[in-house]
Length: 154
Image (cartoon, rainbow, N blue to C red):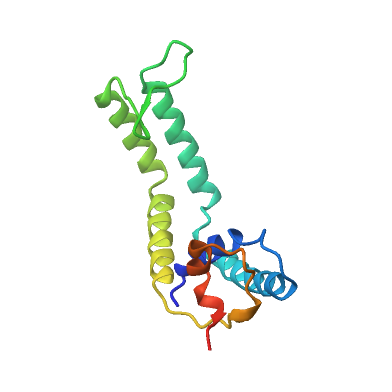
């Protein structure tokens, strides 16, 4: 499996936690713990440095200052982007900010590239399997399909 599959596996496990059955629940819990450990490693790899977080806060503040405002004073955001009034002035100030934090920005880009490479790596994970007969009868087709990675169909 690829590391990127961990997120969909975790979501699949979360979607079946309400189903009953001791063996089933035990298998879900064991697999969730294994997957959570791997995801925790990925989250540490992609965690932004303190300086980059400061840069992001200052960049957002700059966007808010230069954006058009709604009647209530909140910035206008269209398709997850601030609607900037004076783009020339904004770009000048943003470039100054980028220069100040350039090494942190470059480090963040490297960090994200490393994270993306890690997501595409194959990993061996000892997923605990459950026998088909131990699957709760009220499981839906979608739920069953989402957890097929942990079902022993033999």
